[in-house]
Image 1 (tube, rainbow, N blue to C red):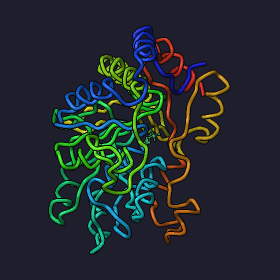
Image 2: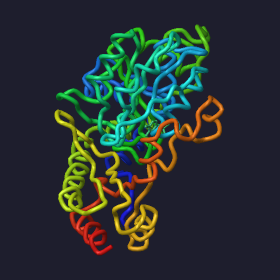
Image 3: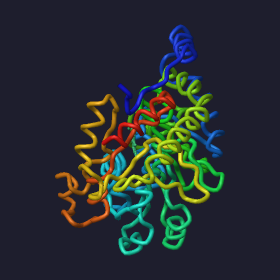
Length: 365
Ligand SMILES: *Cc1c(COP(=O)(O)O)cnc(C)c1O
């Protein structure tokens, strides 16, 4: 079976974890500090704050940038629920904007019509590993004085104009969940160039306490701390992220070369000046293909080729988002695309033989 995702844990990670377990400091400690230092360096930002999930990272970033009750945050409905959930967790309102059919990212031309007096920030997602449309979106943010919080949970090491994901707004958020391009089992990170925002995020992850003065609660906070066990794994993964991404990109390129001319399949595009790190390799299966998307998915599974649908339904069609006033038809591109997308395995453990087998199988179908 070729899996759709598989974490890569080697001797290095195991040894690093063993060392932490034997050190006596197993919660947030020196390894977290070390991991933050290296991760900030990797992203080209001044600060990084480690937390225990990507969701926590998003929640901390919204808090740190001053988002509060009844504020409106513009984001995409075609993403993992955590993106919009974090907005609701901060008692703000997710205001959805439809996506571009080629990159699946938020459509900059549809943002301005959604801006009101209450709009405080834009939360674009670097979906599948390709950074959002930075130039167009950031121009709007600047014009209306909106903050940008980048959901880079799928884009570790992705680039636009040689700058790394996470660094394009006030704050960038990452996830180190087991299936992401690098993992700490569960984990997350916020990166920023603002010392003030970094300090607020540190406070928020630690029940509103500054890390220097215990039991002095400046404000509401949560327990979003990362453990030194997770950080030790993260440090080892970070040493290999460029290699992981290279393999993903190589696999993606091989798939695209052989699949791009098949009628009814649309292969992913890489925009000019962008480095796409292929957290997911996602094709669109249109009406012109021989069988339906769901039939293709089933066929591949029967042949031992793992595949998945990210995401089967845009967020606005789920009951608790519908309650915010959304209905079917609001975001036609997202609704159409969600019926066409199919992600194929490209993670670093997928070999050239595996790729050839995937291609052969699809061609036979
Ligand atoms: C994975 C992911 C998150 C959430 O990360 P967790 O670590 O699972 O909390 C948020 N946004 C996107 C786009 C993701 O893919």
